[in-house]
Length: 279
Image 1: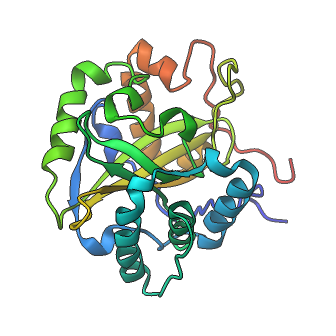
Image 2: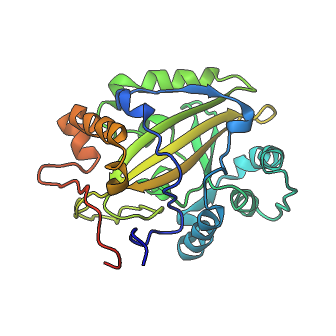
């Protein structure tokens, strides 16, 4: 019998949890330029697990995870070339705009979001979002950055102007990455909050990261926002003392409002223990 408890297929303990971003303030953009070859990830991932999650969630939830405005048509058509180049495969993306985005999304591990410019700033005009971190596409689609991020404590005062300015001025040919982190009670990619549900309960036992990348498409002017979610059990983090220390420090630095936003409200426990095999 294995010494490790059974893990979901998308979790790979052989990959190194990213932790450098834990040193930065939660309310910071934390942007880093990357090479085009680093735009999308495959190394260290069970791609089939991500693809299966997308197929299952789309079949179950439909337009709640796959939704596009007709205005996305040019951007999705242009995105096809970028995904084909990155994955070194030809993609048959036919049908409606949503069907085309779905075909592209199934070729990558990342969820794909399309941001389009408007008089109100950049709008979330389309997305295939099957691994959300405690938000729902139907609540955000068609909205600009400020209302999308309104639930984040301190966003309006600390980040809104910088985010909008960055998106306005982001040049063609530049590739940007940033990370976000949270703790989960369950090891599932799709973390959609139920409507009107009480705050999530249960011990937090999973470290969750989002690798977020941005690129501007040259002809349409759209920005592609790609999100790769990965998870590691906290008991595994505990075997990496430096990583555990960084995470503990990051938790300690959270303000009370950010602790509540990240579901670390008073009385919520963080579980670093390893469950017994077969439990």
